[in-house]
Length: 212
Ligand code: GRF
Image 1: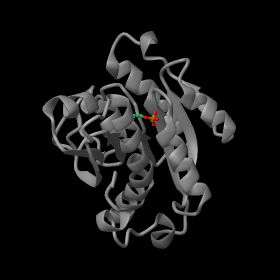
Image 2 (image 1 turned 135 degrees about the vertical axis):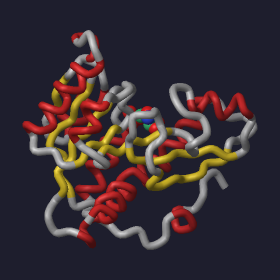
Image 3 (image 1 turned 90 degrees about the vertical axis):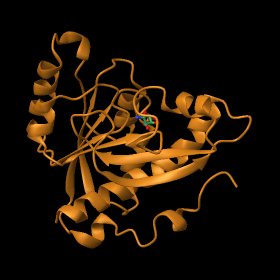
Image 4 (image 1 turned 180 degrees about the vertical axis):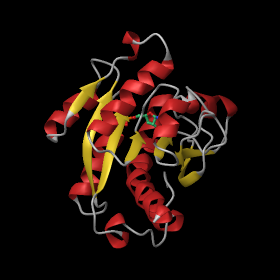
């Protein structure tokens, strides 16, 4: 067995469509491949999540997430962090873009930048992040390598609310993934991502229902 059964981890998860009839306006932030962004888009298409993705913000010009946005006909806006001297200036531009698009909740789906109070104050308790470990273990970059190095037998992924301290906000949902003896960072990441794509949309639904 390579992963924990979804039904063991998250029985009776309410979908957002069960708790609200008005589609939630999401803004997604991604730095790289964007497979989690696409998982949210798929959950919306499948009716698992009653939401609309208003905009994708990406910070690396060659991020594959932008290609996925094009495929889904979702507006993508490049905000390159290299153009900003201070993190607060970058976050001000991000907040302005999110507000312009009427975003209510912000999903950091592989956003590889630290956030500042500017972003947190603009969307209090409404920013969600996904991290490839069972927090509070293995925070920060290289979480998968950290887990292999520590020789843990189980790691996984966590969806949580974003607070100023990195990878530390309230945990919404987690999924466990065994570490196999011959795992490389890549093979382990591939199995973690299967769980990420499952729990991110479910956790968004839970966060929204908690708030209502
Ligand atoms: C995910 O593993 C996520 O946990 C981490 O960055 C990765 C992003 O993957 N924060 P993708 O771009 O969604 O494919």
